[in-house]
Amino acid sequence: MSTIFGPIHSRRFGVSLGIDLSSSAKQCNFDCLYCELAPARPLTRQHTVTPVESILQELTDALSQHPNIDVITLTANGEPTMYPHLPELIAHLNAIKGEKELLILSNSACLNDEAVFNTLLRIDQVKLSLDAATPEIFKKIDRPAEGITIEAIIENIRRFSKRFNGKLFIEILFVRGVNDTAEEVASLNKALQTIQCTRIDIGTVDRPPAYGVQGLEFNELYALSQQFDPALPIHIVSRTHASCTPSRYSRQEILSTLDKRPLTQEDINALFDDESKNLLQTLIQEDEIAPLERSNIIFYVPVKNIHRKSPKRG
Image (tube, rainbow, N blue to C red; front, side):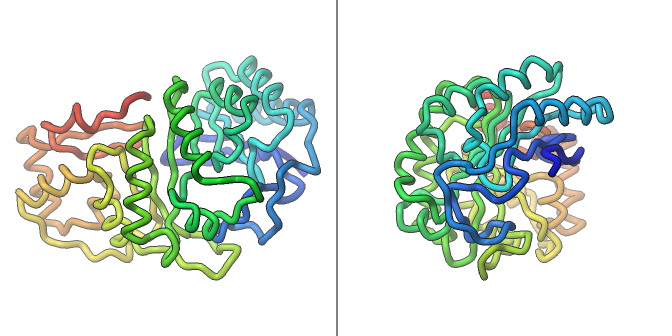
């Protein structure tokens, strides 16, 4: 089975060519409730390993056909950092990537392995999942292999964020009735304030999940976003904008809303009625509101907050 897929056009990361480091089967140290793959017992190591040489040959062939990509994305039917030859593979990829950037999508659990930790420091972009901040909810939503704790994950993400010089993204996926309580959001908020990152993406179930769980509507995600510290670079990732009914916002309400949480144009289309959108354009013309770019995503922010909302890196 081929390890290379794409290109895929991602609004968050640009045009991506993917490398699946577990193309033969699901091999993961989590068995998340929301996973789009079939349920499977969490593993602590890969049992089927694709040779580095095969990956590099397939990637070279794919790059010759698709030279105009932005990122090479390391992922897996499971957890890519479980790939035992990751340090060697990254060394080769850095040697051949040219101006393209390397991105890895990880569940964060293997950061306790210093070899993995140091290897990820050599990648341009790293996306780490953090679905919960308390042990009970972590075990319920991510269903980890024995010995993996959320306390260690948070500490390792914090430690990694202080040493990493690339673009660090944190992703939280909310599941209805599991990690969407005020108490869990408060715990996540506390943890995130100790992590230096480019952007925090919050989303929900939007593909058929492994277990019988449900996602949230856009307006519910938006309400959750309001519970995080306003200085955190929160970005709502949702395919369910259409379920939200646009509302009327006054001038002050627009300024107050964007002060608490910057919005993308997609968010604005979902939340604002036509009159409110026109009022937003007026505020932009008056230099009260301005666009702010965060790694391919444009947010609208009060001009007075530009410095406060700027990410710490990237």
